[in-house]
Length: 139
Length: 139
DNA sequence: CTCACTGCAAAGGTTTTGCAGTGGG
DNA sequence: CCCACTGCAAAACCTTTGCAGTGAG
Image (cartoon, each protein chain N blue to C red):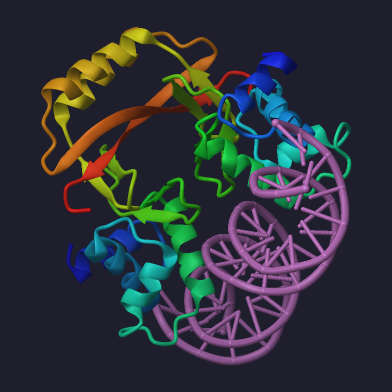
């Protein structure tokens, strides 16, 4: 994802393109590791030395509302953000706090098939996400 | 789950049985809706008018560590607690903040079978939880 | 009796808010 | 130009911590 694509992504939602917004979205794509607001602040400190932490939170909120990014939650109580909006799942490390993306079309199909035929009473099914818990070798 | 069962549950982990711990665990079982620390505080205010909020957090932490309850996370940034420790999934309302439990042995089997044969590189699989997103009729 | 637990209050950390000033369209 | 956005600082909020006093085993 290059700068022009990022600008286009912001503009396509009718949002103003500001250097801060571009830097934040670029940070999320480049960090690629479900960063916290603080991680993002550190990353963009070089290009945006004067950005306020409040601005970061406001921008993240707007990006989430416009479905450009998604919130990711863990048992640790900091909010984290995910720039991938296509359907995917997460590998959670139960020892460290690492999260990795997990894509598998077979898994999606199995579950789509399951939910298509399964009726859940009083509930309108939209989508699903699988939290896959375990440990990474690298930890 | 009656009081004696709750006391037994606490004692079985070698923990001291205190009125505060019993009240908190009873609240989680009776509220039955993945309460926050604050929800629990409100619920037990009648029986435990002097309990400190710090005590509630300390007790919850101990119950989680002893696997009597589990933490549940949502996009809202308050931690929530779940008294059901057997394997189950969650229905999340994307409009309000309601969470309901979802049990289905067929779903568990489908996914256990999937993960048994699927090798994830550099990752030791432990277990999985499915977040089922949608809306409740009652909302 | 003794040590783990509680109550209280203060501190810590993250996120939100209000407002004046700025800059993108 | 104008209104949306930013920077700044304060405040709100949830959760943790330290310590003295208490009570369960």
